[in-house]
Length: 211
Image (cartoon, rainbow, N blue to C red; front, side, top):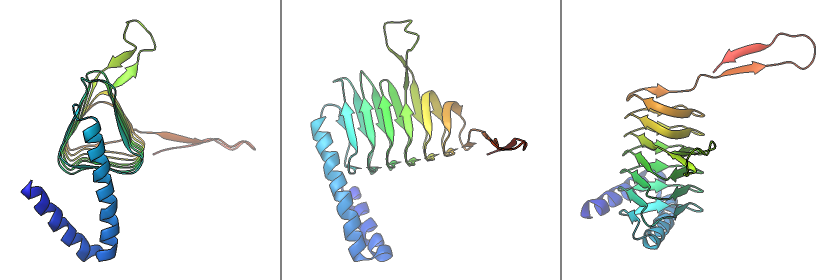
């Protein structure tokens, strides 16, 4: 606990030097509100959430729908605005130290999702460890899997991470990607996409290019 407060003080002094006192006060007031909201959810789900202090900013929420569900958060987890974390059944969600989750992210866990330390998640990312069983060939309406995101991973904006995905350490996931399967460590992952420009007047040729 002493080390945590020491780090906070050192960070504040550094921010004052870079940003100025007034801006630093405003910014950290927002952080204080986020930490207060985090404490509220920690108390609300005291049997389900195991954590130290974490920041949960405006309109972000945690929903736990089963007494068996567990959330573990490491130190200095920061969750920005309008994020939604939902966990059900006997799901286990583990978030490591110094993880940053940006605006409008959705994490839906019914089995197991692990996010390694120092990972940064950009806005509008969706992470699911399950699919709906549209074939209805079992009594369970869900098909359950796992998602593992390694340490020091950067997940770009608008990424969708599907069940049974394992992302190694130091991976960069390009914006707009749909991820499923195993991604080796120390790689850049992107979906190859082709764009077509189809004229609606005249007889011009279709132009294709890859991004």
